[in-house]
Length: 202
Image (cartoon, rainbow, N blue to C red; front, side, top):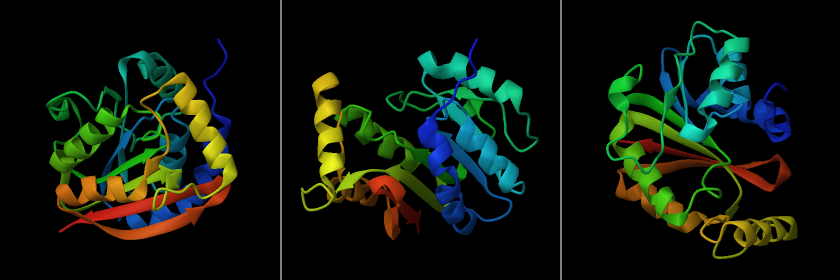
């Protein structure tokens, strides 16, 4: 079987790492939502050995994730857990801890249906510890407008295949975060017309 691989993960892992190293403190435990090929979590675990990582993904991606993690073992990566953000409650009792210092997710919010994005933030609100930080990487719209034509084209292609998906409005996701007691602390412009949004509780 061909080893699971995402070129996008390979391209963006170093730019993301540059910010995560300043966001997640030594000794933190971080939940990754949507780990899939494990390229992010294993790379970050190797580069941030003092941070403990909990990989997760939906049921259909778990075989890929399990296989990928088996190829690169890190002491600070815990066994993967199946997590669908629409689950209520999230299976926190199956994870390394029931409250996390950080939550990270890359390129997921524009793939999820709109209702699942709402569930994502509601679940993060329960999983994130006091002073915890949420980091979300991906493309966003601002004031209803795409940042580039390529993002507009990408959004149209997504909606043609999955009508409830699409690039999200920053203002909407920020309101969802605020409803969970999170405040935006950073909005970094990233390569390939993406953003890194960082919210903090407390």
